[in-house]
Image (cartoon, rainbow, N blue to C red; front, side, top):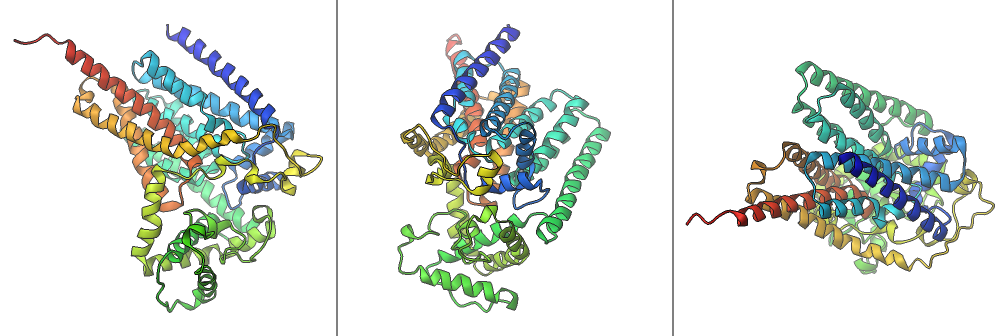
Length: 485
């Protein structure tokens, strides 16, 4: 029976994937591009081993480019990769507990018929690739608790390293992996060895990236992006303060602080709702008019190697400047960055998902060169009216969080742990632990947007549906019990 279900869902996933892909690519012949896309393409074109972002996704672009520079091939590879990972995740879930017909269909639909995955898969960015890796990573954690296989553990360490090379959000993955492995049925020797190997692999990657950053961008640091992110977050909160008392800043911050104040003063006549820095986004990090930019007004920032080297050069200074602003105004930082970002996690802005190609009909030169387009013009056959669908995704995120939290509470109220399968109980603990750690890290690290939340939405739907199924099963059994009187 399980083999029959396996084949049926594999065939169904393949069929829906191909059908969606063919129809979608007819409507959108060209990939979707955002500023990040051009940085990845530049990294692939130059075969860089360090850049503002991790270069793991750029290596995927280059690997596909070894065979073909056809843009549709790249999109198909990353979309197909997601589906393979989602199938592994789906069958892992079926192995955790007995899943009813309708819950199984709901989970399958959210994994394989989700418009957000389809549209995000058309982007030249690391998002769908990273979601796929994350599905494998957490599936392996679910399995390791009851399947003490050294081969699976070795594969998990490799997947963990791969995730680390693709997105900085994977910084929390080793913490979660080590915590789970401690409770796995391995010997103490294996647990210690896996921890040391994990530390060595990630440490080696960080040292190599640091060395390459100095070679490529002229500054010895693991991540230039983190310094800029710190400055962006701090300046955003500082700019939203109703009053800014004069600060006697240390000499090294005097020049940049003067530029920041002058820029904020120039916006005082504009209502906050209309200001370019009004929304909680990465305005001060990437906008060409940002006072933090070393060359204000520079064009094609993400594809400008000289400008990126300038950004990398000031990243350590900006990291210290951001920390200084936060230390001087901790309450304002909490009020204007952390607190809004706390709620933005639950109601994330649509950002790039709600628009095609940033609203332009052209692409930057590096995209034209890499994909060998005859011109820089791109087009769609769709009127793009369907993109309004993503306006409802923030509300969907709220619903999913409520579904998961209410299901979790109801599960314990009916004494779910007393009758639920041990595999499911362990997976629920891992999923809950991940969400708590990810929530804290995301709120502290950077402004949260919808495309960062799709993996969490998947976990929320899965555990929300499975928890409520167990709750309903428990109540049905209770109602069938004979009356003791």
